[in-house]
Amino acid sequence: MRRITIAWTVISIVFSLPLANGFAQEGHSGLGFGLRAGLGLDPDQFALGGQFSLGKKLGIARVVPSIDLGFGDNVTTVAFNTDFLLRLIVEDANFGFYGGAGPTVALFDFNRGGSDWKVGLSVVAGTQLPIFRNRATNLEARFSIGNIPDFRLLFVVVF
Image (tube, rainbow, N blue to C red):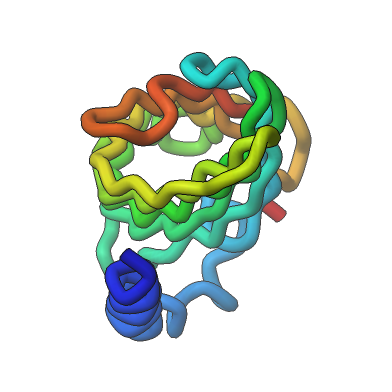
């Protein structure tokens, strides 16, 4: 399973690098580094993480690799996600919707000993909200297919 994790990380980075070229010129249109926090179900957890949104050259499409750490329910989870998203943004309003899916590799570290790696698919739906001036802010719901955390509701601030 470790080989799968390493392979997926390398694949994600290789496919994301060509998209990073346009990031520095894009401003705050939801591209760039972001911090995320929220709650999850099954396991019931508080989640913290980071992401990097790429995709200026793809127009409405985005590639968003991220990592989430979940704490609670007698287990710590580490989820590695690579989401492929499409967004519909209202011009000049910093408001819009996005959705997509992508693979997730998750490590479950049980408090009573032992750990386990799982692979699944995350289906993502979210909205970009104009909460902070000069910052993209998102409210995102993540649903799973497979043996990864079932649901996460995250608030994201992109810098």
